Length: 67
Image 1 (cartoon, helix red, strand yellow):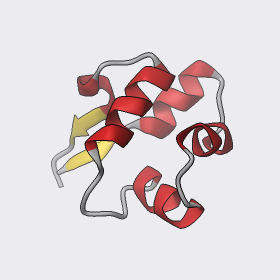
Image 2 (cartoon, rainbow, N blue to C red):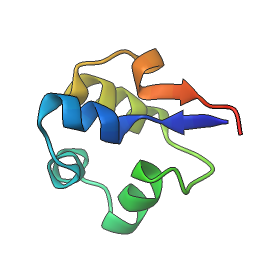
Image 3 (cartoon, rainbow, N blue to C red):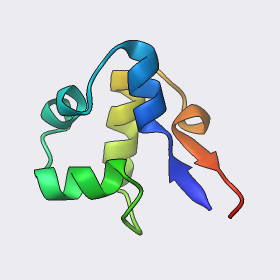
């Protein structure tokens, strides 16, 4: 299963989920579902913005985990 690794990256950068939420400008409900891997889709523009904000590559942001 493909998962968003944003929480781990935020911790490494010393940033909070609230900081990322404010930077992305999304609704809190959609942001919370996305950050907690509770959604089935993520827009490319959000992935691109998170890579830019977290100074990471897409392969660091998205990780494949076996269930």
